[in-house]
Image 1 (cartoon, rainbow, N blue to C red):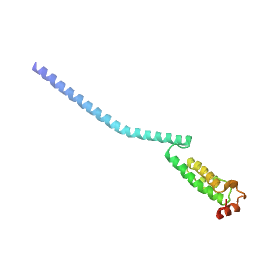
Image 2: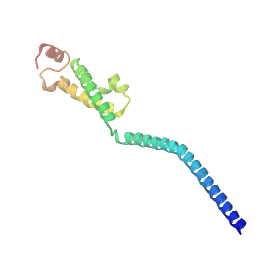
Image 3: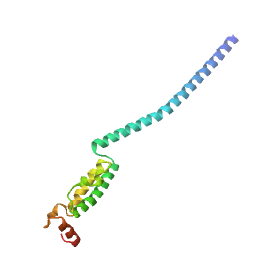
Image 4: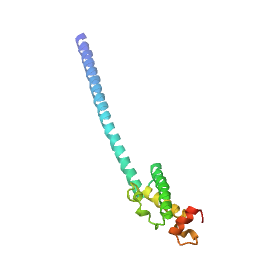
Length: 147
């Protein structure tokens, strides 16, 4: 009877050891699989997020502070360019400027056109209800300080 009991105990110990070994191997394989898939999942998530952002930017004309910065920069450069064109007696044409032609984003172009319009109007464009007809008279009036 003791030998039967001994065989049962050894059999149970071997079974428990095998079970624990199997569980350990499965956990190790699972941990490695999670580690390698996790990096791939994050890359796919980042790629999908970038695609969504690009699509949203193209459809809505911009949504973040980067686009607002480009629009503001375009506006400031547009004011200077529009004012310069008006003071030199040139016609209203924001598309003539290399800033507009070489712009890398639509928000910059939109800001540039708005700024150009404001600068052109502020500095004598459209005759600004002046008695002279623009051109050299506008330039001389600006130099001499006459409205």
